[in-house]
Length: 382
Image 1 (tube, rainbow, N blue to C red):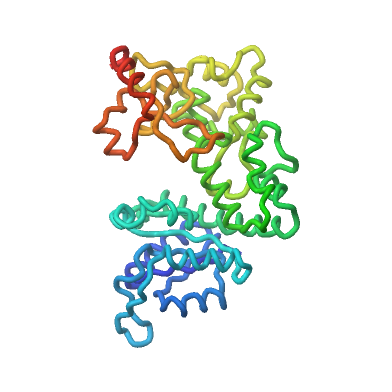
Image 2 (tube, rainbow, N blue to C red; image 1 turned 180 degrees about the horizontal axis):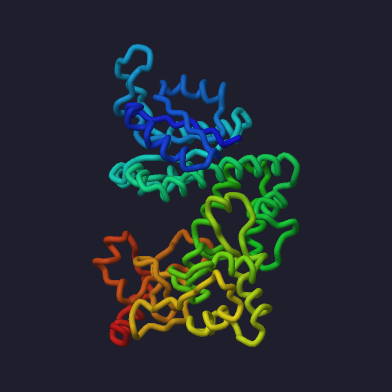
């Protein structure tokens, strides 16, 4: 049986239902999305407490054009998605409501005007989606996978929280039977000293924001390909990675919606599979692909990833945050990241894309300590 979502939006159902249907239809039966107009704040809370969904999707602005399903008259509900989400999170933390994922769907212009600068509001939601992106089939399928993964992840964390101590919940939620030695102990003990019970949403938010959303212990597919030296047009690279590094794929909660790999396991497995190659990060992309080529099957074809510029190194280890292309650390400069976790990798931008105008367009800033290095790299590489 698929994951059941309630989608609350003040737009007419003729506008919202096709979007909900496009996402649900792309899920292969794993997802249902019921569309509803918002009620008054008090009535909405009562409805959600009485019939809690497995997951909730909210439009950012619920106070613009809601219409009564009974009378057809306009309704001024007087609240927006963050206010409703905050109340639902509080009720769940108090044990007065089942904990479920909450996603936010809105248009990019509304995000920018009302939401993007409010870090507190962003923490309330497990997933944000630009409605304008709900067009392409691949995008709809990705959203469906993530919504389904959120429901199943919440169920898993909830079951663990009922049976385990707080310190063990995180270990098991991340897919390990015992705490792995390679993870930063500050990460693993994040909840161990808490005097009160940790809510399901707190675990979910921590895993999504601190591990899945930023490179560090876990890396996404583009970063994995960069570290293996493989171009994105490579064929069968996923099966190759699964075969050579079988324990590297993340098996914890939300992994079906956000494929990730344990970076340290990839590096350690590389040394085991290719003992004569030397450390992975010291090899050029051509050397990495040459070693991988000795293990290819007839259905797999990998290409060497190319540097962004001819005078850049191919010892890739990260991505340029402007182009999302492979980048070697020596060819990039660090971005400002005042809120970044100590266990996360620092984000970089290639020197050719680190000019003030381009960074402003992408809402990025250089680390203040990198300005002199940027000027030095410009002289050498630009």
